[in-house]
Image (cartoon, rainbow, N blue to C red):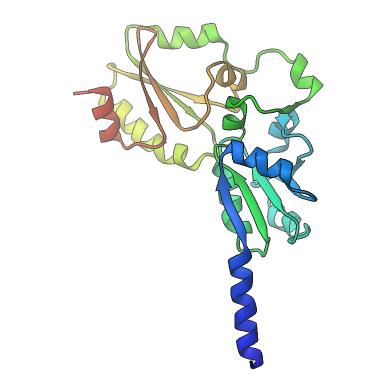
Length: 234
């Protein structure tokens, strides 16, 4: 076999042994327990990481300009586990890192929101344990959703791609139904306690209220016409 053919074969073998995959929190935990000498990387911001994170995780912020540089310093032959809040940032990181030569990458589907929904263990700092309620209170939220005008609450985050796509659709909906419906935006990072209390496990999530009572949930991105049909707006 000539050198050119050998290089092509080695390239093929390298591609077929790559174990890059997005897996459920259950499989993620199982794989994490069974794997040795792994990296566990939280790709959220330092502030998010300081509040709570998986045990033994290190923090490398996906939105930092040094993200790729820091990841390049890791041993690409060691298994790599990544996660974020809901899977958006870690999914983008997964796409980048899959091309960098890491031999095994595991991305958690749904992120910490789904991890917490399963009551899996988290490392919470003492500061977070003793801190007061973060963001909007439950009473303030009830006041916003308990009026005569129906309210569509949009749970979102500034880093969430589908949330950014949803905003112009909601802005147009608000303009079309001005005085008939009000749209309330809730940033889950700034209102962490409320999001935790309401068990918000994925974003974007829209919850439709009439006089304080939940009428419908809409998960994920939807265009204005789809939202109108779901809410039976005419």
